[in-house]
View 1 (tube, one colour):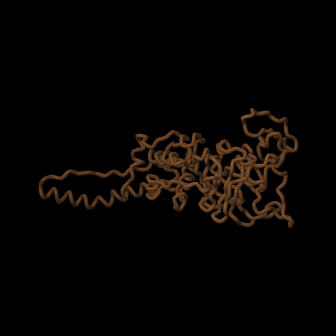
View 2 (cartoon, one colour):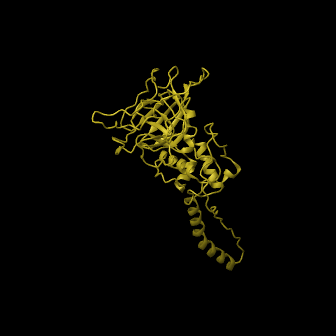
View 3 (cartoon, one colour):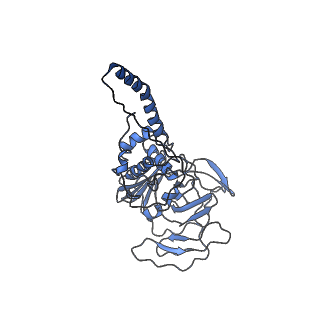
Length: 359
């Protein structure tokens, strides 16, 4: 197989970019797992002489060694998996950043962030999301597909969530800034703490509403820096497990290193389009100004079951501290809250609309 050139010339930073330059972002250090460095295959060239005997010997040697050289190179490419280290890994990371995926820092260490970014790249190109850089992935990195907006008239600042491909696309000023691997609702029936429901990520047009800084522990699991886009408690949030298939109770899981800065890229009122390949989606209606904090308890259906799309929302604190006044140019007001004793979540800030106080 003929090798592409972008990884080789990465040593002179033809495709090199600083960490985060593709988005104007920074992400924390990735997984520092280590593994033995990959060995680069080397082709040996031998000169021939003018004598008949020397020429015959040289031809025999070339015929014998050529398959060995080709096999070694292919094995090296296919072996570029989590735990690998070196300049070739760094070249892959830099190239992914150029294409608006986020593998974490381009440190030459094939950690979990790189796995997630490669999976997102594979899903965008219709490949099995193994998280490994195969020859097919390497070829696609050289000549990638350009993503096509699914809701081009949906607002200049928006998030598009593709459920069939399990991908998230973030646009700022109509420019695609980020493509992320996700895991959404698994569409299975579940029961938890006296309520039952079906784990569905609701298709349609939504808008971001509330957010929580840090870990949020709900009855259905832990959410890192969730940003909610339905009144029933569905959010985009970080998770320590983001498998290559739908696995959540309805929320949209994203990798932890992306969740660190994702809330800074979206504002209250930004449109969120969840596309399932079946439901027609129109531009999201404006967010009403009287939307307050989420309800203290998840709503229930007449038979006492949780709604199909529920993931427990942030509970409204009982005793909020005084409101902090922010400059007019900022987003909503922030209200510092104190959580009841025994709650595993960390105290934090509940984002509520301007001129509303936490209840």
